Image (cartoon, rainbow, N blue to C red):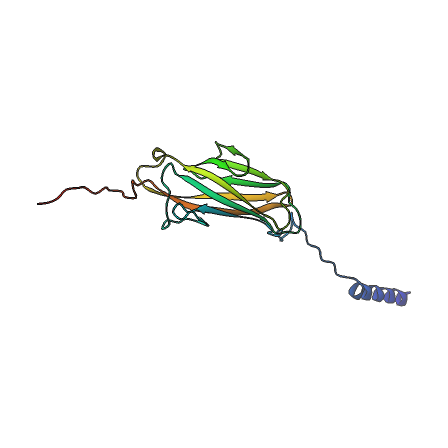
Length: 192
């Protein structure tokens, strides 16, 4: 009986070691270290007020905007997956000193939260949709009087039910409240 039991245990052990197939499965969500593929992306650009070209950011050494100026952003929403995403939600969070004016895609703007929400339907595999968003810089009275140079970041996030983590991006721009770019105007007098 012991001999039969030891043969059975040996066969069972050999079967467990050599007879099983390894199975690997990817999963995303609770308890997973993995992140879903980043194939729903957004890139945000701001239009340079001098060259009228869209750039990633306008830093402190780049052309600036003045109070009351119009700022145009371009959002490039890209689906590089093999599936269609629908709906796709784009949330554009406006910083202080910028107010939503309009966009090429109809959306809902919450003035209190300074947030624009856009919905895109049927973003097919391989498609990129460009959205233009226009904002206005606040008037001079909205800015602190002890400074004349302000830099802000406009943050945007894109998500879809199949990609709840989505992607985000921001575009920076700077505002100067100096008259003609000068903080002290020159005096016109001549010494004799």
